[in-house]
Picture 1 (cartoon, rainbow, N blue to C red):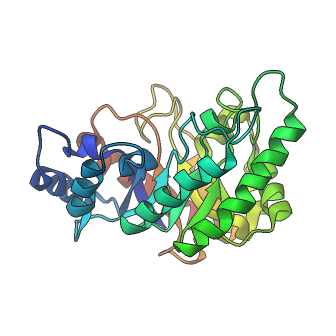
Picture 2: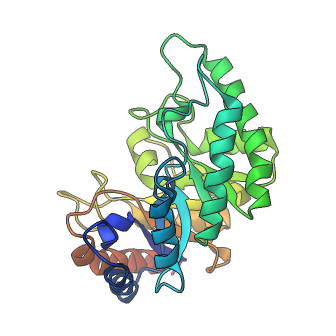
Length: 281
């Protein structure tokens, strides 16, 4: 399985005060630490901002030491996909441009969590919100397929969302949608927060297309204040699901907070590799 890191270009030195050379050098450091890919938020493609910033990033990624294989944080909160203020044509226009830029960056996965856009507004019927979410997903699917991208629905914890909370619910939703290109993500951190049993990961089977994890407290693996998340159990469940059968397409990204990405990358990735070996031995 390939382990990657969720981060941003600014964390890697690509901002107003630093150069493409710094950015590429930092990607090389992460590759040497054991990262196989990186995962950026969709916002860095600057769909609704200064397009010159996107051009700088696109050029910086050309032949870079690590590829951006996935994007997350897809839809900004002002593009509602549930509730009384949905503008479906508007959000789909945003998505079409964003997906094209994600493809240009080299990604094949875009994660649809986006609680700010999908969370059911207070007083709004949940059934209607789910109908809206499904309509949006069905309209989104062909846009993603045209770019060679798979959309991965991300269940979130109950503190952040009230629409799609568990891997089990996500698997049922993928089946109900029946849209090629709309698949499922399992995020071990959100599962822990919700107390969801790992058997739901194994049961998700071929619906799984991407994964995230973090240690207790949403910190880098190996850096929790007390204890360690059950990474071995998570990896065993992924193996049972069939997710890890192809090590070149099975990805797992750390998605959480860093104290220092460059100091923590090698220890955390080494720990995850050890736990993965333990889970498969």
